[in-house]
Every structure is written in structure tokens, then in C-alpha cells.
Amino acid sequence: MEKSEILIAAKTDAGKCRANNEDAISFKQFDNDKAFALVADGMGGHRAGEVASALACKQLHIQLQKIDWNEDAIVSTIEQINQSIYTAAQENSEYQGMGTTLILACIEASQLLLAHVGDSRCYQFANDILKPLTRDHSLIEEMLDQGLIEKEDLGKSMRKNLLTRALGVANTIDISVSLSQLDGHGLLLLCSDGLSDMLDDKQIKQLLSTPDSLENMCQHFVDAANKAGGRDNISVVLIQY
Image (cartoon, rainbow, N blue to C red; front, side, top):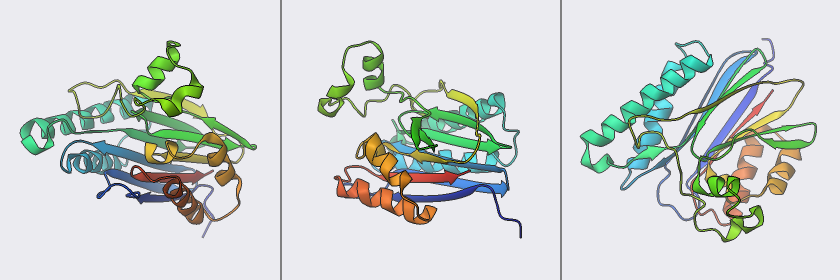
């Protein structure tokens, strides 16, 4: 059997402070140079957050096996999923107000297509450099852009988790999409804010720099986030290319 050029591992954990896990993860590898992975972080009363993230994951997992992976098709598919989550929330009083973040990575022939909504993130680690590939759709990010707060003050802010975009909270959605080329070898890290809020860039880089199996690395990330407080659900997907 030919060895794959892409390897994927994933781990999700409720964390230390939450009774249930509202994160959802999914990935699929098709052949040596084609794969997708995604993380969704749900929100809403009762267990509605779990419903929203599970809907996003399940529907995307199905649709990504049917459509071409271009920007228009991906955006159209996510818009349809947004509408289905929004409709489910309108039709069931227990689901009202539910929504979910989304970070989706599609790799095909060394081309990376990223689509994201909310504050779940994607990082690239290559040539000993850690590079964020997404910008949070959050109030804090808007305040940074407008110069209303300094990056050094982020730890003091109470607005870190106030999102400006999320799937399912309205019948329309603005999706950020980017295309880039994956040259050479490296790692992609997809994660929910339960990881990125607990670990800074230096800690993330250190964990990505430590050689191990992808499965063990995922566990190390979860353990480190829990050791730092584990205040939220923790999800991590690692893609080696």
C-alpha cells in the first residue's frame, strides 16, 4: 500500500469546567493528496450548541464528498448549512439562539482552501515558523483593528468570546475564504478557542516542535489546555502534509 503524503489526527475533550462537550470535529482522507478536516464549536442554551456543531459537521462531511472544492461551491454549501441550522432553531424553542463556529480546511494537490466563521482557528507550522492563517470574527479582533485595545491587554479583556459571526444565528452569513499553496512539509493545526484561549503562541509552537505521533501530539495539546485551566471544550485537529 502506498504511503499517504497527508496524515491527520484529531482529539476533542470537554475540558475541566464544562459538563458537556459542544465541540464537534470531522475529517476524511481520500487519497495521497486530498483530504478535509473541520472543527465546529457550538453555542446556545440547554444542549443546543451540541446540536448546531453536530449539524454543521454532519452536513459538511456529507456534502464535501459530493461537490468540487472551489470557493464558490464551498461558500454555497456553508450558506445552505447556515440556513438549515437557523431553520432548526426557529422551529424548536429549545434550539432558539443556537449557533456554531466553523473552521474548515480542504487540501487538494497541495492547495489549501480555508473557510471559517467565528473564532475557531487554523495555524500553519513550517520551517520552525508558526503562522496564524485565520483572524477571529470577534469583538476583540474588531477592537484591535480599530486601535481601541492593545494586544498586551487581551488577557484582561472580558470580551474575548463575543463573536461577530457564527453559523445559524441569522439566515445569512459572511464566510471568510482563502486559498494558498502548501509548499514543502509542515503541519496545520485546527482548533476551537478552548485550546487557543488556554495556550499562547509560544506554547503552541513548542508543542508542534516536539516530535511525536500526531495522535500523541493531539493528546499533549488537550493535556496542556486542561493543565492551564481547561475552562472550555477543547478540540484539535493536526494535519501533516
